[in-house]
Amino acid sequence: MKNFQEKRRIRVILESRPALVTLFLVTVFFAWSMVGFISKAEDASRNKKIAEDKIIELQKSKERFSSDIQRLQTDQGKEEAIREKFGLVKEGEELIVVMDDKNPTDSGLPKESGLLLKIKNWFR
Image 1: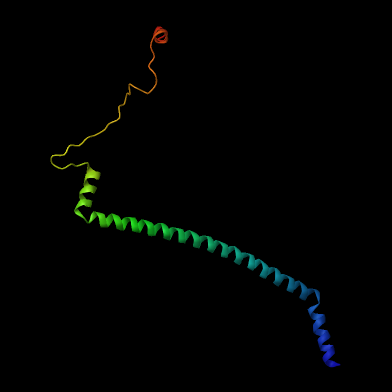
Image 2 (image 1 turned 90 degrees about the horizontal axis):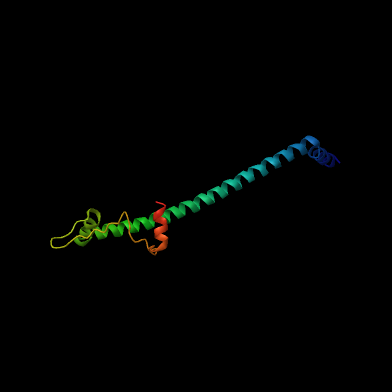
């Protein structure tokens, strides 16, 4: 009988209002902590994806720079880079520079002539 009364006393304590409020608060605290944990896990996942993309981009640029270095280590590559950067030519070669005309005369439109041109000239 004593064992039964002890069990009943424990049950009464666990079912009391302060115990239930405490249990509820502990449950809310853990739920709130889980929401924060899930949010941090999603942020970490996004940051991981960004870092992986950056690594891929850096590997591509490393490969490009390595190929540029390989090319510049040859005489032909050095010559090509110098010609491109400074506009130099070898002896016997000629350099052709193409310049845009600042005042194009032929804009691709049909030229005006005749009566319409005479009328426009009256108002100038």
